[in-house]
Length: 512
Image 1 (cartoon, helix red, strand yellow):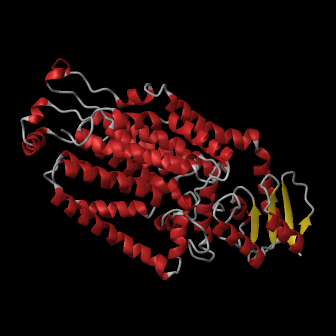
Image 2: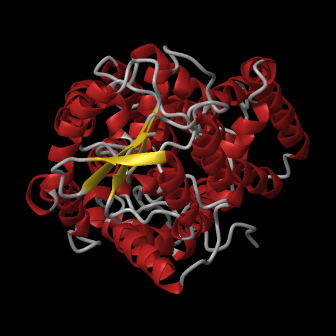
Image 3: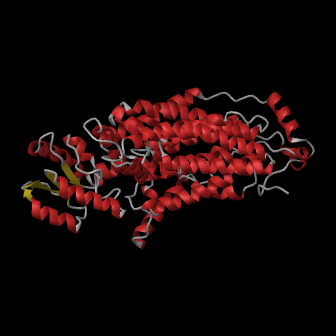
């Protein structure tokens, strides 16, 4: 009886020891040819669309604007996490610091896309022995990144090469358990991914760890499993402790933990209508890109044991990730689905079908495997393609057709702020985005740059209020469509005077 659920068994496998099968397969199995040209072309195209276009046309997500602001502001003063609130990993903010959130960042995104495509192909090819379909996974990967990472989600994107470098070694072990080497490198790679996108990496690590645990239990490789755990822990700690020491040395470790866990701490049911809006938006997107269909296939479709131990945990943690995203309090944005994107890629890989063999299917031995691309597109009624068009079209409609005025007025506001303040003065933008700081080249007095983001917890809300009271920015710009807290109204009445302007959607207040 199998411990893996509905796992396909082949008559020949029941008669041959595992080691003999592995030895026989290793003699004739060679890696498929890497689709290098496709990877390079896709990486260039995706980098231009997801980063170049949003930077040029002011289409970045609000969270990404804040992250890029932190990279720019660190050149002026302050420490990450303490002075600039962040929910991503330290290496990600180091990269935004080096590039200052500008076009130089595109080089690193391009490298991440190339390396991510390479390791994804290698993982899929090693695990399934279906080179053509491994190439199809790579195509789906780039297609989905183009939509989900349009103007946001860059931290997870940069973590992908590390995560799938680790999984390529796991795939090699699942395909050939007699050679369980390289687990220290797995730990090193997973730690690299963690310090770019902590929560996405933790979900990925949980899926892979559970898969390895079940696989080793099923094959009675208890000692090997314990050794693998120690090796991965050693590799992870070699990166974790030196990198985390920076946060400890600068006194920002507690703030870093608070920022990274903010999506968890902010989970609450404040409004049924808001929850329904989140569930509807992210649920439809998940349906559109094929998550829900492949979760069902991952749980109930029969497959070989090495694929089943990945597909079931991936399906379960995808559901968990969607629940977390649905209960978050931040404004809606498709890039938030990047949290579960690495796990979804694992699910896609584990749903690759190979050639069938055995007595029950002898007549179909020579048939080609069912195309993953065909099952992904046609099996989802071509919704992934329609969803991609939606994700790329809506930002342009919002920016240039439906709500062009706020974007235009922020450009003019930046000039006004420069006139009313000096470079040493702080300003605060009571707005749904933090773009005004970079445009006006002025710093915020608070680590919380916008009342619309990171303010679902009482701690962060009080931090923002205290910063406005104590540090008193010289100018406060208020977006009329963003609700002003009663405490902030009191601050404006007592300490600020309105500046006469002709803006239709903003008010400007200057300190008395």
